[in-house]
Image (spheres, rainbow, N blue to C red):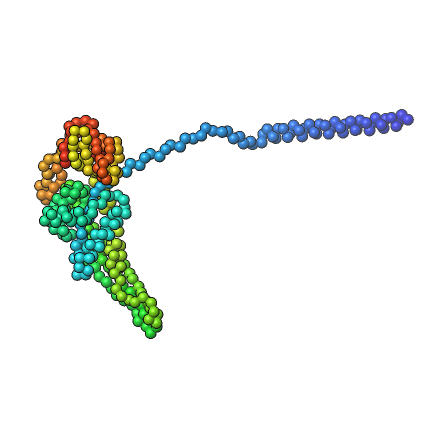
Length: 326
């Protein structure tokens, strides 16, 4: 009996020890989990104040200059006057597509040349260009010539098929003249090539007649190369306009909205005196100038005119020169 009680006590002690061990293990696991969780990497998202994006600065576009093209001379034995006129038309179109200039119609320039009894071909000199350009208020004039033009023909003629090919090659020379001084700003020569092919089978198809479109295509190929350089060279010169008229209230300028002359623009006005000529070449390199004062553009009138008010200095007169304040 006594032995049985001792056995039961031992069993109860073992069970108690087992429960105690299980409890201790559970406690250790819980502590380890808590410790692990606290040591594990964590990610926190903190809401930051919104970043204000700076507004891009306004791009200042300079006012446009006035330019025109005189009918090119055709120095070749081909096409009579047609090639020169076509070359001038193409250049005017390409300059217009650039959007960098105010184009003055060639008809107006030709009329001035005729009225002044001046030559109207690509051979006119810089002085003549300058004189005609000033009457129209131009900044620059382009003169030029088609110096070479030729058509090469080829093809084949077989029993069932026939083909014809034409290749037009041309050379165009230009000069860009600054009206104010008569100085040549840019001179260049460009070559253009255009091809045309036609064929037929058993007499059916396009006939191999002369294709006049390749004339224009070859001229355009030569002239398109000039446009970027013309834009750069002309716009590299300081922009200016003229005082067109003055009354008691306003100063009227020959540049406005079409020229991209912004309201609020401030200009310096100069009166110009005698011509300054190079002692070596005799060419006009400028004019004597006297600063009169400053004006501010306040309104537009017409398609390309503006009115201004005097800010300081002496009131200008008709014909005085206005330049942008740097």
